[in-house]
Image: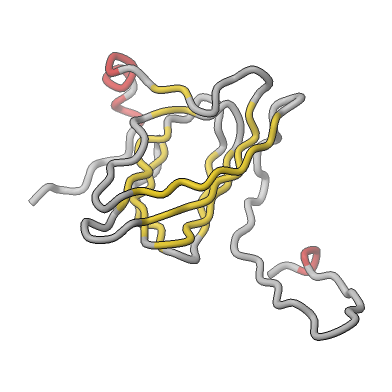
Length: 144
């Protein structure tokens, strides 16, 4: 944890335990006039999650239960487990995956998004655009 996140406070009793779960150096700014929203997403076992989409602004998430398969354009897919955080810059970057990585249990995550005024929470990406931008997607792991 960097020093700028440490604060000296006096508490009337036992102080709370505070842990920095993740930081994003150089994170993109929220869109002008953004609406911040926090949502809880609960995925049934094996759920693929949302189809490929975009967010109009940055989004920050934390897995509260289970594990999700997370993938952003240009980055390899990765498993994010309960207690771990993730983020995405929003804008033009495609969010490919946020599905449940578990076939036998629910997974859940909380996301705070900063949406441009009047923009939907997420915008699906067409099959045609996915095809046109396939060179921007990280190599897929071998299926076997």
